[in-house]
Amino acid sequence: MKELENEDPVKLEEFQKKIDAEQKIEPKDWMPAAYRKNLARQISQHAHSEIIGMQPEGNWLTRCPSLRSKKILLAKIQDEGGHGLYLYSAAETLGVSREEFIQMLHEGKAKYSSIFNYPSPTWADIGAIGWLVDGAAIVNQVSLQRTSYGPYARAMVKICKEESFHQRQGYEIMFKLSQGTAKQKKMAQDALDRWWWPSIMMFGPHDEDSPRSALALKWKIKRETNDELRQKFINRAVGQAELLGLTVPDDELRLKENGDYHFGPINWDEFYQVLKGYGPCNKQRLDNHKKAHSDGQWVREAAIAYSKKQKDKAA
Ligand code: FAQ
Image (tube, rainbow, N blue to C red; front, top):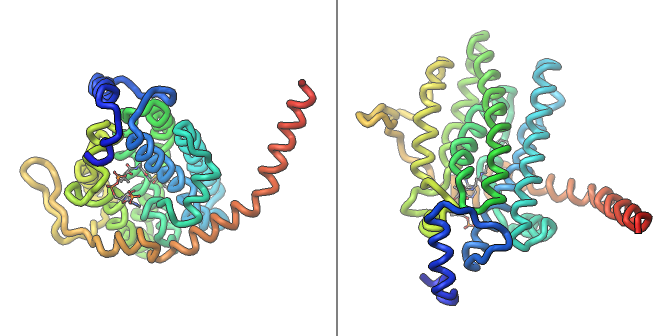
């Protein structure tokens, strides 16, 4: 493999043995450059997703239908911010600073999840995001709790606990709406129609079109393939939609003999357009992030100056 040409074969073999024995790789351990680079990319993209992912829900904070739902949504969005922070910290252990990661995001050199480039026009979208987007994120992240890199695996344990609360808050919103008036039920159905396919795309390209998967699976960065995780998610979500009395927008959906659902073709053109920056909200999401980052510059400077002052005092 081209990525491994310059690596010491003995060290590489020892590294693989460790991975095969399910031992975690820690920041000071030897690791191939390609392992470090791919992990830094994946973890930082994951972190960017958590932070940018606060925006579609933040859009509804001032318009929640009750104080109770507002408190819950506020807590959820705050959790997502926390997830971003654990993940940036895990990624920084690979030798790249958070500032550098954020610069790459702003320059369009790093991605964040395609899903957050879709709009949330109604309160039902907040339900669909919690139910489907957090639901998809959990399926992926439960698997990542067993990733080979220690700091990433440990961050995932806490994140998964919080995500399951997020998924339930979304499902509760969908449940209330689907039990409500005909208009409310339609709102829930429309939101399901909007978020179903983008949630399916979140798992990334089919395995045969996923350039990162071979090495990521060999090194146990990823423990299951994109298609395996996507199938798990669909199998769960279809039953949940039935309980809500809603219809999954896929004419080809049917239960197969092996217990998996067969599903229709995914619109990969749409997926790659979103990845290239042409989704409905890409520009808005990135512009918001850049503005918030620049508006917060003085806070970061003040925090650094304060901590320096405290250190000087103690010296
Ligand atoms: N969006 O070869 P693969 C959340 C890229 S957290 C954008 O298959 P890989 C919580 C991929 O990065 C959601 N880009 O790549 C929440 C790669 O990019 P490259 C985020 C995508 O990495 C809920 C290229 O395509 N979760 O939602 C996407 O082996 C509610 C080739 O693809 C994670 O990030 C996509 N959907 O597998 C927050 C989980 N899919 O190399 C707020 C960790 C693929 O060109 C509110 N990440 N790409 O730069 C992973 O598990 C993996 O990175 C995959 C992709 C599975 C996403």
